[in-house]
Image (cartoon, rainbow, N blue to C red; front, top):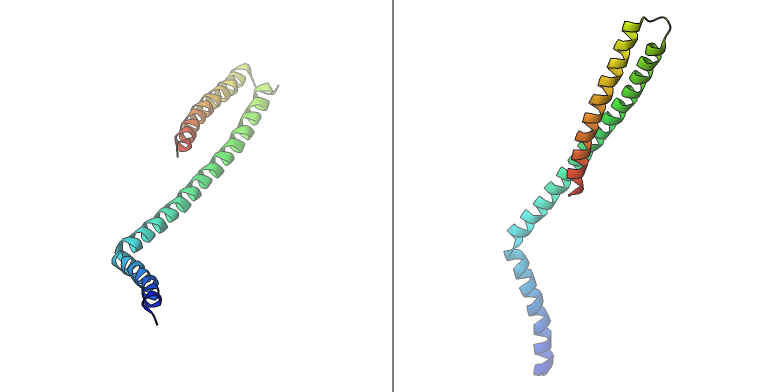
Length: 117
């Protein structure tokens, strides 16, 4: 074997050896980075589940609100109710709408906050 073939065979081996040594020396940092990525992924999954749960809750509340307002509207138009009771139903509907719009603004604030990410 001549010197050129021996030296060319040693360079790939020494390069691979340097890479292996670098990986071994940095193994604690590599493992720590993998742990951090795993933790962030788990937090993201958990956050997604929490948001989905909140969305489901809001959808249920939306349906409940709709049924409640429709029922109160029917009652406020009922001929069997006196004027005072009808006024009370209308006040309740007004209060529900005020609460709904306040909560809607709060939800919008949360949505705007999440859009930043």
